[in-house]
Length: 267
Ligand SMILES: Nc1ncnc2c1ncn2[C@@H]1O[C@H](COP(=O)(O)OP(=O)(O)OP(=O)(O)O)[C@@H](O)[C@H]1O
Image 1 (cartoon, helix red, strand yellow):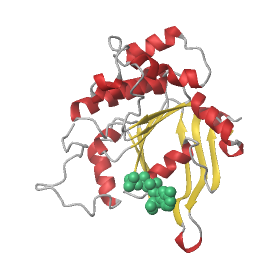
Image 2 (cartoon, rainbow, N blue to C red):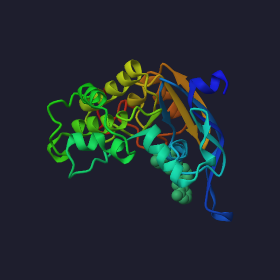
Image 3 (cartoon, rainbow, N blue to C red):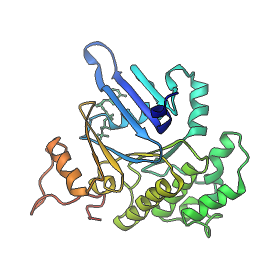
Image 4 (cartoon, rainbow, N blue to C red):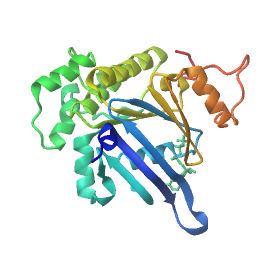
């Protein structure tokens, strides 16, 4: 393994994904080559239909590319059978979703430690406590998700994603269901887990403000990688998205475009 492969947690090489066959086929990813460095926070953006979800599914081993390879810590996932892929996802990858995806019957603590149980690992009490403290849920471990605010539920999901010490966390619109202030807190928490734990995070988002919390924003258009921005600001990201035609079908807001959030606010 060379030094570049060691520094890269996730690497996609010429990944193509074609859905369907013949005249009805859709090329969702058209030769995407990208690397995500260890300990980096990357946002993935692009217009609707540009291939973001497909990218996430292929990069996380939830779906297989039609051609090309995905490497996690230098290991090629394409050779893995389904059982090995499932095991690899449980042990090496964390997920954070817009809709939190917590199990309602389980307590906060049970939700957070579930990935360890599924992986057949005995929870390391110190690690679990540290993660719970880090996300600020020390007082809530016995509560059920329905007894928590949206922001608290997403904190549980972040703790659940971090508890296994995964190589990478994939987040899909993690602030899409949160109000502006809560979204900011969740993004800061993700940022902090990159800075202090050296966690690698890849986040798909439509929101330039959310993307501005990342170290780097990667842009997709028509299934291709079309550029990236390091140390992004929301304004620069929004401008790039406008150039990509991301909002061409929407009515322009009076007085010009504002930085969008899921709630229409700014942050
Ligand atoms: N299961 C599928 N079968 C057929 N076509 C699909 C399938 N999933 C996605 N596509 C197509 O692949 C292309 C990329 O879709 P994808 O969902 O990855 O884009 P996206 O950037 O995530 O879009 P959005 O921002 O609207 O969620 C689109 O043209 C879409 O219609």
